Length: 221
Image 1: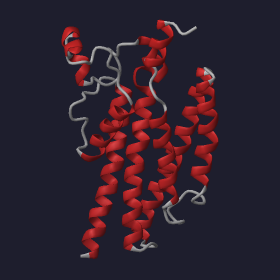
Image 2: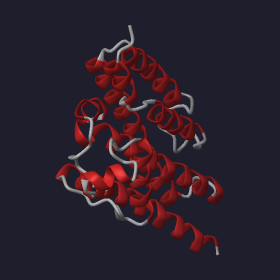
Image 3: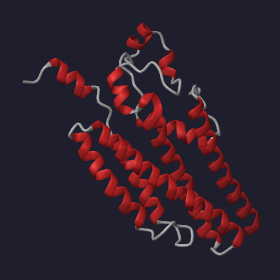
């Protein structure tokens, strides 16, 4: 029998598919990297991501939260390790000039996008204890980031149709995108130290990639 509590529980669940798509996209972006800039063969990261994401999704569907959480962390750690290695190889590639300018520029663009998607997944996974904890709390009132909706008065939230607002993956993707383009969280203040540290790392990676792109453009001209 379907009760009102069941309906509210299902409605309050945060969809996982945007984060899964983002992680799989990072794997596919790595497939476009030249062999000298890729950590292992191009098919390796997409394969590992699929191997980890499929049981993660199954565990989530079966209500095995702890297993789903651990597998999600493993998938993110693998993707992060691969992207970090590729960025190091990209820097070496710029200095050694082993690749053509077009290959280096396209690789930098792919890694910049991968950097945004990867950190968006980390923010989504860690903020407020992760999606499971955010679901359990219902109304999102605390976390590592102060979203604009969190500063609104409760009555004003309801008037604006944001009474049960919780951040979703797109909110963290927007945050990660701003960090890599404006080198700041723009409209979302950062509250916790771990989030500040991660955002500094993300901005630094983005800055390194953009500096390399500018240096290569100057050399071409």
